[in-house]
Image (cartoon, rainbow over all chains, first blue to last red; front, side, top):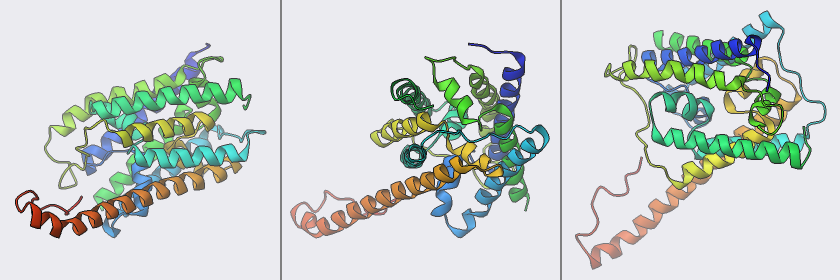
Length: 144
Length: 169
């Protein structure tokens, strides 16, 4: 484990910005900044309930674009990662966050912030499941 | 107008923070989840930084009674630790652990798309839409079953069913 100020400081500041963003959305609009809920319900929302979702998501894209523009730190694709695994992974992430009503931002950042036991349990479950899955995929199946 | 601007600004901060934090690098995320490898603890600081803020700010905000620009807080009152939530968290964990992508970073990466995202994001949307479809279908079936049962139930036990039943959501 190697961790220097150059990795933990951006992580901490980036995390705090995510927290401030969630704070703004709840304080001003009364909404929780859970990306999966905001995105998935876009496809089933009433017309009056779509614009704020689109704007928030457009903001997420724009904010990341701004960072990539000033930092030159845009992620490159892995050379050998199998496409079918990405498709399976995507389907599970979509299905699971819709069924469980939240992802890392909804249950993790917002749910823990409002001391929801349900979100704490969800966060512990998906974190542990992800750790086990990563172990299987990387060390037993040898996919990097 | 104000509300739309607030959504956009919150999104901008959220996306910038995500990209700055390193969460949009799936390999970095997997380096954090891979506790058996060269463990990268930095993502603990992302969650710590974010929850450190919301733990304090949400306490004050939720005491306000209502948000600044809207009529009320729209927050789920769901507190049950039920089977769909547990199963959903497990499926999400498997998906996240395979690729290192969760929904927030996947959206942020539209800013710099590569072929990985073109495989992941449509599949994620399909998964969520499929789940909602099954959910709505089973709700509809449950309502139809109850509607079909109603006359029989009325004959047998006139006082057992409440009249408000069947209105769901």
